[in-house]
Image (cartoon, rainbow, N blue to C red; front, side, top):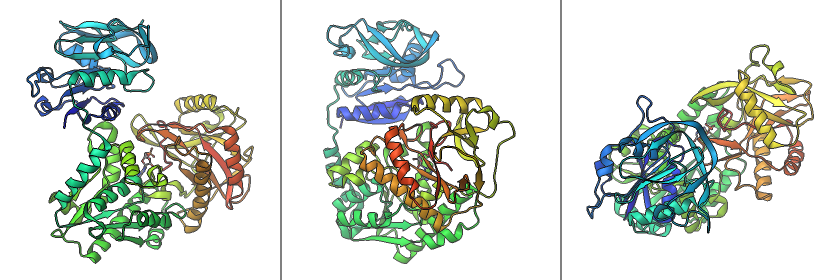
Length: 600
Ligand code: XMP
């Protein structure tokens, strides 16, 4: 199959480029930017991604210069497209000049195209010579390498694009891969045409070839898999069943006690619907609550939950007598988890955690692990799910963390206010006496949130205010909007750990929220919607405080808070007020960074 390689120089869009190329119908792999050029010989084209560095900074990432001399099967030089930092690498390595720009360009720009053929064919609107694009750079190429023609400029960037048509090398300072660049896909399509890569990748073909590959790899063995009811593990499980039949595929689902309301029954339903007969449901909730009694520290909570999970898994393993002569292990790993680049290390760590007990480690070492969707991005996994006939409800499920509601039910031993003087700096704001997690400059921060009241119903203005506060007020990493009651006269904190009754309140509010967004058909606009319980009662009203945390995101590395229509939000609050145990309702108006999506 013809393929295109994307070299990742740390840009936030590297995965997006590979994903877009696949959407065009050509399979694409993502590699570390500094990969040895020899390994790329079988690729029909190479794309150099953007990146956050300056090419002149010490230790800055550069590609293997041999990439530019690489010849493919037909002994032609392999075509290269550099985007943003990738464009600057071309300028720098091939003998041009890269310098700091007079001004940085971030955001929308208008680019003038001086050669509308080849890579820019059809990019400008009919009769126009310019197009709206997305720029994000400080350095720029100021002198093209020998043999290069300048093909585009903006008012602030003299070489917004350049090319050496003979050698088929193209550099573009802006980002064609993002939707803010109008007709950006046109450029990527033109590049794919230039490479001559055949359009051989499609989800249908993937399903067909993967089913054949599973049968071959598994042979006569059986496959065991941990399932969560999420889209990845269910799609992987379904593919295994299609390939091997339901007799030879076994699933284990652990009920930790921190599931959503009715989730266990839902998961049973999902597997029944796909005809799975061997899914074991292990109720370990009692053990979990017991192990978490009197635990307040969030990291300790996670640690206990992880360890318990392994304990349950190991118990089932030995009960089932899984031996490596007869068994293989299935996993729902997806493509971004397998790529060791900056953006995905975190996800990788979280997901592999549960799959490293010694028994499993042994299977991995012996090559007895099968990962049917490890080549796919999330949107592709969803498409496979749809094609395999899984329900839309399942396919479009929001991601849900392994420790479940446990990380959304804050446990607090005593009140923790920041130093004196912080609260007074924020107008119409009240600092809460608890802390939540944030990411500020790549490190996790535990800081206090501030609740804002008497605010206009305008999420754009509120977003700006939130950013200003977290940027300027030390010790604050989150801003919340007070939805109910109208003002805060007093805050009482209750010493709390994880208990079935607290989880039950959280399940009730979470159920109201999830049903509400489905009913109003906004569930697909929202990437994930944690509802968080804080052991705080407001103005003496008994119960706990609920925080709504809907976000928009691509892969969870960054996120924006979701700006819900205020009329809808008022309706939701009315429903939440009716839930027993709710003292107050707040709305999280913080992006990631500076706050994480989850609160712990
Ligand atoms: P944060 O809160 O760091 O979360 O912005 C990013 C994404 O990861 C999920 N998450 C977890 N998933 N185990 C998981 O399986 C965990 O311990 C965990 N913590 C966070 C979170 O829901 C979000 O999608």
